[in-house]
Length: 209
Image (cartoon, rainbow, N blue to C red; front, side, top):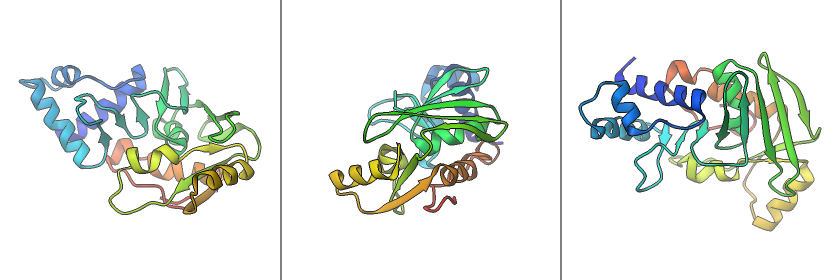
């Protein structure tokens, strides 16, 4: 692996172990760099490759798909590890497949606020509530930045009716409704090999990647 790829792995590992992103100083020390600016250069390369995202003016990693350094409605309790924030519903579902670890996902219906829960063990959904939950994937456009353009609206809904009400209120016509099973397939394809390939692909409507 190149130093940039190793830095990406270090960022994801730090989220997995601590629940938050490493600082520039952490990265500098880990790779024995001369200055924090050298660590910043690594982040800039990773951001250019679409693997991480930083808020304008923030030198720290804001998001490293699938993790968020900022609180979101999608929380994932990793077995034997911390609770982490995921950037969106698909990211939350992808974390246990990326880490090959069991996890409990807690979120909320974007429309009514009711609790959403999914438990994944041994790479299989073993429990979920409510039974009719769906996931909304907005229209994916070429060149979009997922952290800004896709993730904020990629959420769980208790049922198709809740999603319909949300779409009507938002005048949100373009996108795809995924069942939980389809969303899991999409999440697995996106994140299962991320630690090995350092490649991130936007979700494809219909459950593919």
